[in-house]
Image (cartoon, rainbow, N blue to C red; front, top):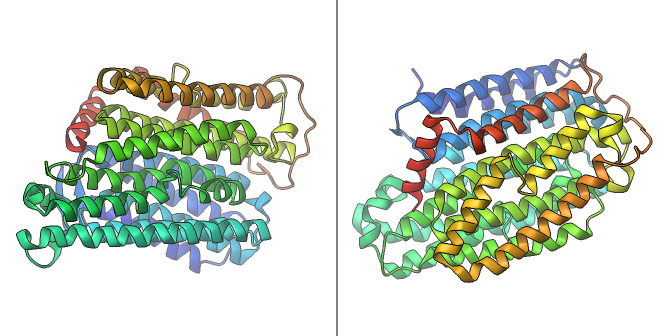
Length: 481
């Protein structure tokens, strides 16, 4: 029987083949897409109870299991939102097929990137996830969508080339100790021999991997693709890019950090991560004040929160970093569902044309308001807890960080509260519904139910963390130190 981690990868890919070949008939492809995503979610959650260890080219451990489960939940929520909003995207048969197939290819590649024990396989998986994302961004075929897709492709192409060179260097560093072939590409084997590798090659490899995969994670300075991609692609794309792709890319950096950090003579990876994280946090926090497009604004918020995660891992606070990654994925996906639904109701994703949602559509408006408050770091969400832990660690380990870290958090939170007031409070703006939006039975429930469900999980993660998951995150922190 095929191992469970392999099933998690191959089920969405089999779904992609079926969706690509099946002729589009009404809403059937969207419902099949939802069904496959539901199966993927069930398998991903089932992995939480699996034994840790290597199975072929996959490795299950405390680091990737929570992120795979998160991928299942967000993939299912995105597929549900997609099923209700696909008509308003106005795809013809070919574009609808391409979109659904690319969505499932992305889910499988994302899972493979997280589960892989092999540097080369992880590199291929992240590249497949990127290419499928580029296709989804470009699927509308408008000039702005094509421009965003090309920017995404070119910048991430540069990043993946740098990551490939870093992968080769890491393999070369281990080759004299583990020999030719797959062992030199295994994360487990690399950790075992890292202390005896050439420190110069290790250091150079980490720099290339950090810059390469950091591009895909949305870290400054090669971050410019992210706001365009999230603003121009289909509505569910924003959730899977911010909630899933960024995590997989950052995990590749963290795996490399865990290897290089074992050699006392190699370049210390922590300060580099802190530097990139601070640059991302500060640039994004100030950029939030100048955005007029809601989806573009929350894409900049993703850059801010990836920066905060990088700071946490660089400081040596991996528990706070893991909690922040997971909390951000849940809350940001919920916010994008709320913004996407609002854009369909109001006929625009401009902030000035979306207002008073709490008065006109209470379930949607208050859910979106709570999600934005969560992104601002307010309780009772997981991001409040992770940011508190991060500030406490910064004060204990690097007190000089308190000023720039506090400045970034304050400026970003103030900008988000300002947007919360504009979108959710005050007088409602006129509704101009996009034709075809939420045409399925249940209407807006297809947006509000995933939104509130993910927010509830973010509260649970922050203030009622199940003991099993808490133990898993503690074990992950040990592996990532």
